[in-house]
Structure formats: structure tokens, C-alpha cells
Length: 111
Image 1 (tube, rainbow, N blue to C red):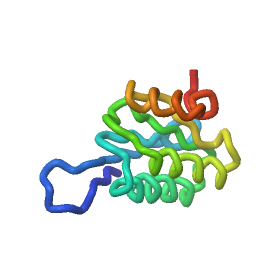
Image 2 (tube, rainbow, N blue to C red):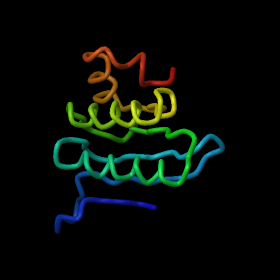
Image 3 (tube, rainbow, N blue to C red):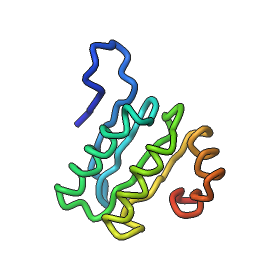
Image 4 (cartoon, rainbow, N blue to C red):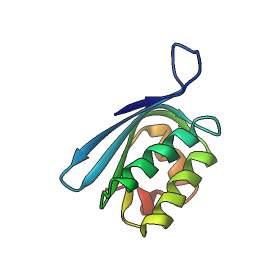
């Protein structure tokens, strides 16, 4: 499954590809996660939860920007699924910097 913004823009702000893994679902995001695109990430996470996936791994290595809305979306998913069931397994430098600045890198990024 690949999802993208529904704007008429030929270059969507965010695309998300979902793949099954041995531990659950891997969501690979490409683009920017902000107030406009975070609902797409939230929807992809909810879809993965609805399939009964025991864990959701977020690959954010191709995300160029993430604001507090993106962080909030990830934290809400972690809360809903009991903490460790949602984790960031790869992060771009801008995402890693955001996680570090907010003190969330230890909670979210698998090292």
C-alpha cells in the first residue's frame, strides 16, 4: 500500500509505503511530516493497527522535515499501542535532530 496527499500537486508532500515484516508492519515515509500531512501518517498507523499488527516500525530515513504535529502523532500511537509497539527504526538527520532536541530520541529511535 502506498499513500500520498490527495492534492493536485504532482509532488506530494508525504508518501507512506506499508510492508509486512516478521515483527509487524513497517511504514516508510518520504517527504515532510507537518500539520498538513500528519493526518496521513495517523491514518497509515491506524490502518496498521486495524490489521492486528503487533508492532509498527516507522522508517523516517527519507523524511526531510518533521514538526511537533509529527511528534504528537507518533506519541499518540505509542500511547494507544502501549509504548514499545510503535518505534522509529530509522531517522533522517532532521528527524533525529528534532527527536534529540525534544528529549524523545531515547524513547523512539531504536539504536
